[in-house]
Image (cartoon, rainbow, N blue to C red):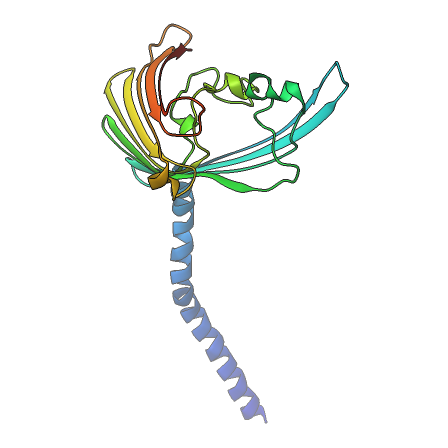
Length: 251
């Protein structure tokens, strides 16, 4: 029995020694894989960017005592694919139609962040941009007001002007965000030529496209950036002629 116990003990010790020898070799691939994780996470952080914005707005009418509350949520993300191209994504949700009556129609509305009675998260923008030197191409689901009729102090309805009529020119019949293509050329510093072909849906790209061409100058002073632009467009929902040339300027 003593000999049998010694044999079992010898076998156990032999197994332990073998595990001690083989375990580091077996764990080395996993350890190598984990060693790549910090570098991978750092690379992802350098290429990814994201922003979230949640806003609540309460408005009241002094004449009738009407009060309306709305809220909105923006989730924005970007992915830099390489030094010349990137992807962009914007998800939006909003709830609350805002004030009613004649005041809601003044200045083409008094709350650009208003939404439907029931909240719904939707895809507003999803596009790919390629840039090379002075040229840029953007394709996907576009909101043309991000690229056209822009200025430095009145292009954000939440942080700058809440009334839609003060954010973009009311006379331009921009379509709802939808499929489109945008081309841009910067011949010199502060100068740009841009054009776009877009529609609210895929069928509209052929049946009723919205086409716009803009020539812009962005002179920059000591404190404020100016923006002078000449643009014309064709299509869209408007009561006037299908083509409206316009001249605009502002900060």
